[in-house]
Image (cartoon, rainbow, N blue to C red):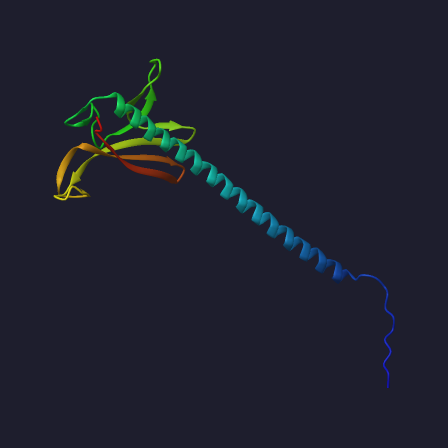
Length: 161
């Protein structure tokens, strides 16, 4: 016995149209979510790159300052450890960097550099606590902060002269 089906060619029903619209809506919502996330990540990367550039500028400014100042028994000239400083160019030709006490804000980024004494153990290794103060080495911590984020670079400068 053969069953024959009627040819039903009446068109697309309303339910099929609603299903297609729902599928397209879900797909577009997903794509917009991915685009929004991508934009947030792009802005975050841009801000982090700017913060790194500002931090590197401070490192170079401190290096220039160190090369142009006298390193005495206390370290880098008149600078005091544990106080915040920021770099500023002088009016000299060619300009030199000087360090001003306080923090500096540039386009929403706050930056500062803090100097600390360096302690060494009997094997001449740098230690966090204990040891003997090394007057020819200073720990330099550069911090650039914005919104609820920050970039921090720690390096050491020595009296190379």
